[in-house]
Length: 397
Image (cartoon, rainbow, N blue to C red; front, side, top):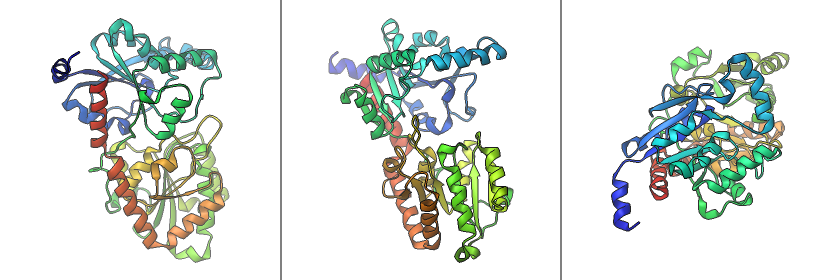
């Protein structure tokens, strides 16, 4: 096509489908919502979605997942063998959606809905873009079906959007040419996530006061998020005589399978009055929650099949100007850079020591918080990310 032809084509609005199965969420879509000014964007998700989608400002299309298409009892019986076979999150009726779109933007190489997208390429003459969070090379390839799906998606995706350099390197190791990969991180709304005073309403609702020194954790309550190490470190902090006047509180935001065990542990350690299990909040409240923190902590621990892929809560905390303490896990060093303190994963003593040092050093906290905000402005502005996505769509089309 001539340069004139390409220019004329780009004057029209493309139809772009963001395909996320059960993973559609506001924190990712805040970087896609600005694209509505330029192209027709729709977000496709399943009826068993893991996140609230009501506040997403993109037209949404809800489809049924294969696992939920046969009634609740049969679905429970069906889900396990499907996943054991390596078939994750097939979207019923997705093929019909491709009749009206130009670009299908899916996520990860091992999901069935990504396979559905690349299978539809020839018939519907669409382009496929795939976001890559996965940063462990050859992960999810122990099963023949999963391996087949990954191979097909790797081969037939037109462009990969890796959220980190580590995710890009995983794709390259798996055989994807580097020329088919661009690195575009997740972004946050910097006008919403910004430094502000602690909100009295949320302090009061959590039984906290303005004089409390708050260490904040936000994430799924599982072992690999390092929540037990953080509780052990907190136990040592509040029992350190040098810190008695600090009124240190640990606020834990999130849900997960470890919640009951965490409650039990805090009672056994006799620290339950200083640990606040806050549950979950709607995403439009998360800027208020982040700004309760004096320190944000995310001490993730890598496992055989998972390591921190990005850490949206880290970027949100950075945007709010919070000093960070995290770990050398997965993509965290790449995301945080020099704007936080990183310790060895799975070592609560190292975590305790760095938290103690930071609690005692207000000037260091101020410096790290300022650096964090500057890094967020430089790398994680959702409007900038949206512009980059717009550019890659138009180049791909």
